View 1 (cartoon, rainbow, N blue to C red):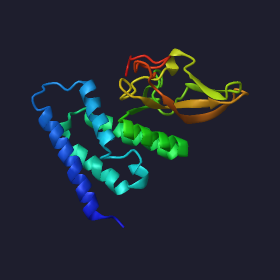
View 2 (view 1 turned 135 degrees about the vertical axis):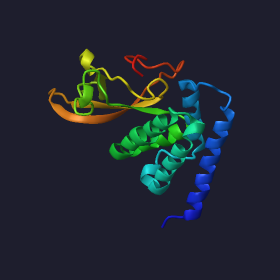
View 3 (view 1 turned 90 degrees about the vertical axis):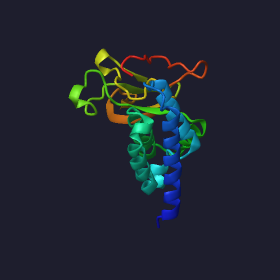
View 4 (view 1 turned 180 degrees about the vertical axis):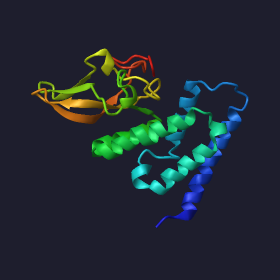
Length: 209
């Protein structure tokens, strides 16, 4: 049974947070992506919306979307995209396709205020984005790890929303085992930033982020 009083209380807290953000940035004429991502990090860290809510509390999950949409002027036009990438595309995919250890990473990200992105679109996919996946995830038996690579220019992931500032990424890649035979598209949760300095990891550029 849905606790309407708890739902209302959570809604009031989220609305108050959004309104306060709007007051703080009311004098700004332009909201940079750094400032917008910092706002989302604050929201994540405070736990006003949890990255497991889609699974554990869907009623609140969709109510939170309505509240964020209603505060579009306070939060800036780009925040809605960030919000849905974080909680729907990134966290939603981990909840749907991941195991307990992956979901535990979501909880750790929540506590740290970390952001995620969803790497599906490839350069030459065009309007077939999602139907064309040429990035390869090959299993390396020696290290017992998956090695992700884009075998050609057209397979490079691009236009990845929140890619400029994400800490982790869900990468959609064509799984290939030892025989090199395609096992179809699979989701891989990877670290997107190196621990020292916070820059993007090897093989990641800031173009088309």
